[in-house]
Length: 173
Image (cartoon, rainbow, N blue to C red; front, side):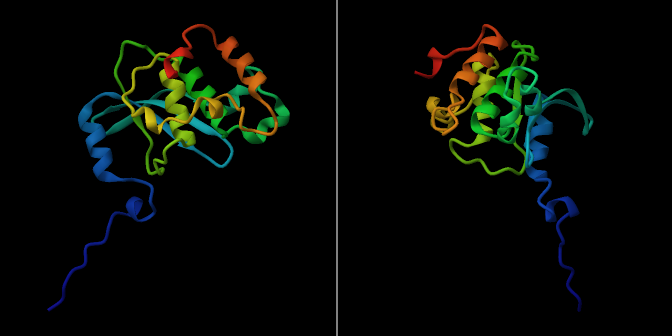
């Protein structure tokens, strides 16, 4: 008698899709903010799902920070915590603040104070309402780049000023 062994789906075996998590996201029928980190950049997309078909409505990359005043010499740091924070903040400017969004981190590990939580912090400071534990967010010193040897805190303040009003610095204190 032969026993059949259940083999997981191909995308699950390759660690690309968590079907249980995806199914719960699809049931919610809310628009998702998809956050992906590559080797060089951080990508954010607004995705709407209609009958299990994903439609990308808007997107932004941390590469666009160079257009907003990020020093081109620091282009290797476009996936750093301050870059993730500013990318999240600039993406929040594109969103409707009245709508409800769900953050989709995919198969990335959820590490307290990580770059992904810096993106979420940027979205919150940009005015998007997202439920998250305050302990998970990175400290303000890291968001402002004071922990780096390069001293990019002045550059970050310049870009925050360029993004305009709506930034809530006093919210984190």
